[in-house]
Image (cartoon, rainbow, N blue to C red; front, top):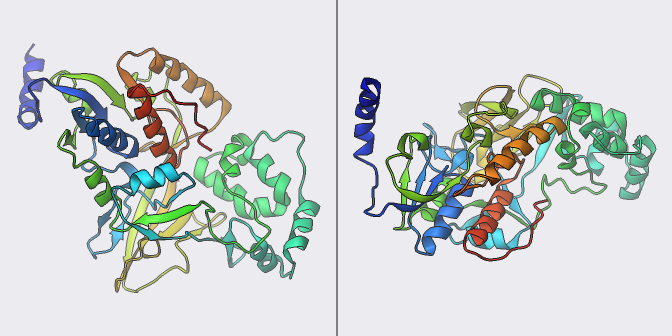
Length: 393
């Protein structure tokens, strides 16, 4: 009893700031990233009252951006490049931001050269000192490829397309650093995300819409959550307020295993450590990101001014170092992990008045646009609109 009194005393300063409404809220949304913010905005637009909480000190989730001490706009959680083929997703987000056209380009540091990635015609010609045409590079890939009867792993995906040497130079080391596993131990979906091209297209993505929020992601999220029916609380663990704030339904976007107190054990994730640096020069890298598949402990370095289009006398970059522990970023795609998630998925489906949405809540390696699409689909379900199952490729 005394312990509970102490707990309430600690909570009381925070509780006095709770945005209580006379009849409570229609929805408590846990997490103010893309999934939670999209659903908050959609529900509020229908007249629903929403309280959205986030344990971090800011909204926007991992897409949050801010100005560093030098005045450079940075992404604290690593570069977030927006791209999509979905007109619905693009049009929806366009309500909250203007856009800056941006086509992301990446080079890989291989054998002392900076070469285009994804692998394309120029990559092969520069690496091997050749002068192949688009038709000839297709023949080259066919000559070095090692066809697999069945594609099971990430190694199978790459080796069956471009052979063992390119696999070793561009993919194996990067994947081992990123995931802490050899590509032969990972699901095919990991490297299937990166195409191989026979032309000179050096864009990292080929999507129809490749843009960045003109004034940054945080500004976009602020506009999304600026509805009078939405109340926002940051620095807040939902468990600390769920018993004090009345609500009808919960939308949960955090890690699904954490919601159920790790009943079946922890779902494996990879985390990242971000090391930010500012340099007294206008530009440091030739492109937005340089990958280091074989050298150093970090996987890549990104320069924000390429991505944001900001003009500034100084420049800020971020180094990404994969970690086994830390904030969950990437679900580890292995068959045994998928089976473990299925247990949590069954629990989630059997939990009344709670909807699980987003990358962490559904243990999916989704891009930002795919999370938005999932949230829009979830809103239609909540609104009673019958929807077909959507493929988030």
